[in-house]
Image 1 (cartoon, rainbow, N blue to C red):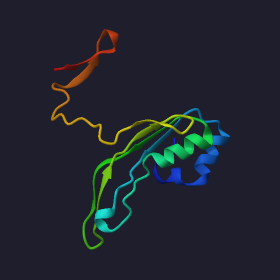
Image 2 (image 1 turned 45 degrees about the vertical axis):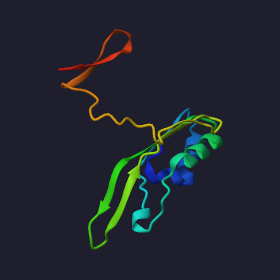
Image 3 (image 1 turned 60 degrees about the vertical axis):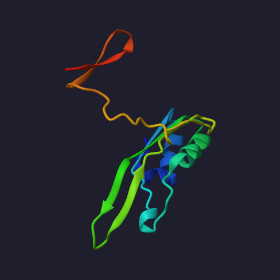
Length: 125
């Protein structure tokens, strides 16, 4: 697992290669900062694709979702766009979350979620 910025350094990829990683998980908190004059491009699939091709293993890149804000005097405005992706060991993007998120206002009711026979989920009151 490479966490956030360490994914951008050679030591992380080198350690994954040295220790023969079977699968790479890359949690990120990479915002689109174009509203503040910064970089518009979070890591998206290009970093996951690089790792998959170099290491020959599948990669799951997940990015934070929501607002990024720092108040004045050093004000920063941005947003975490998500853009999570699953990349196969050959570097092909198998799934990307761009534009496929649910628009539902509610996903469950009650207190918890339980698994019933056959792997189906139901709400538990």
